Length: 184
Image (cartoon, rainbow, N blue to C red; front, side, top):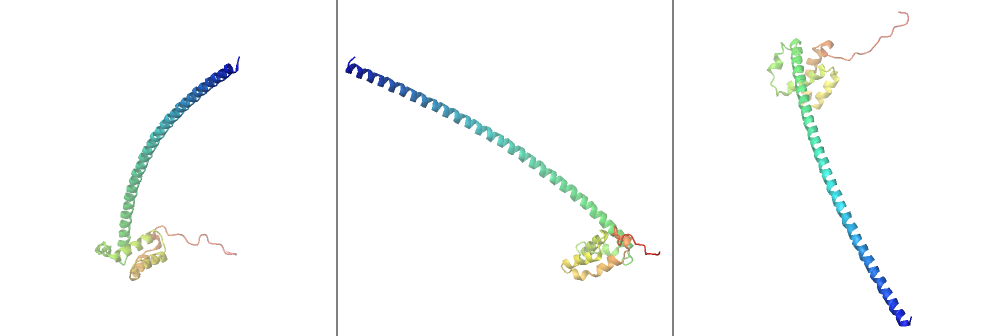
């Protein structure tokens, strides 16, 4: 084989290797595009699935929150009704106690007072404290916090001194057990 044949052989081999390398690179690029397309498709599916799940969770959370708000509203209505019943019972009890008090002839003073009368409002608050077993000092403190509360101090005497401790409801017991004296 001569030089020329050898050069042709090398050139042919080079050309074949280049062609094969080009085919390998093109196949690799095509495969890379296929992998990329597949990955993008999977990512899109995952994203859509995640959005759908998020919408479902949000919807369920919203429904749950609405149910909680409805339950709270119902509970609030029940509490309001119970408080109104307690207030009505307290007013009835206050009227009974007011009717028994010697300073008021059969509760006529309470009936004659207008519902928006500030003096009657202060009297009711004092009576509420009295019925709850609160000491006179606490009622005085409440009056000092009211605007013009000082002018109603006479109501303290009317409520606290006109009733016995047994009428005050659950008055706290003072002193506890008595100790025996030595030798007795």
